[in-house]
Length: 292
Image (cartoon, rainbow, N blue to C red; front, top):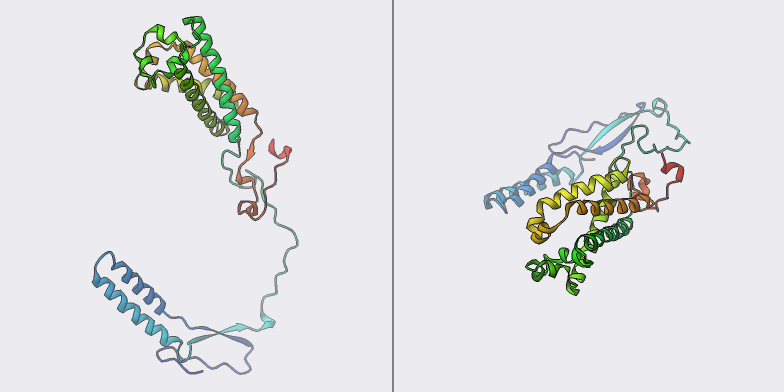
């Protein structure tokens, strides 16, 4: 093999030496020079043309030097290895399979929540809670205002100017547009709140009925009280807050009960690596493992 100009001389292979010689490509810095040149050439597109010119020149110089390292004969470096008799013994593979640690065991990192409620439970729970809230709202209209439509008209007043400027008699009268708008708005808000329950409750401590039936309604009532004069002024002027809090708690208790009773789904951290990568299907966790 011919010697490449500029590279260190390759020592001849020793004859009869108690060792094995392998040949590896000789180390060279020209690839780094080419990479730097390409980087400068592209960087000049957003800086100055002189940077691109310098980068192209540097890349060409590096390419020429790299070419001389491999042609007409590649530069190599000989490495002497120990003889087979002095080599380290081959390590036999262990027949035992690797055991995957359980969630939160042996240093396995646990991300909360381990289980989540299905979104369908949140939607169903929101509709059930909305129905419970509607029953109390209708009861309030009949008891306090002697009108079955009073609460619905109050909810729809923000979208119907006639009810916003109307009298108490207008709020007590039946209105088909108010009934349709109020039903749609109430149903959508109930489903949205139910989805929030399904997402948030698994991340809270135990006693979900306390969080969903008492704490969340009180927080929601405080938020509504702070913005109601901006969103729906007529509703803010006529709302009965004790009845409002009672209806919110009815919603929270009903929705929290439905969401808490739903069958939880394990998060991806309980799956194997192959299942997370989509190579194989995830297996359902046994009941005994779910309760740990």
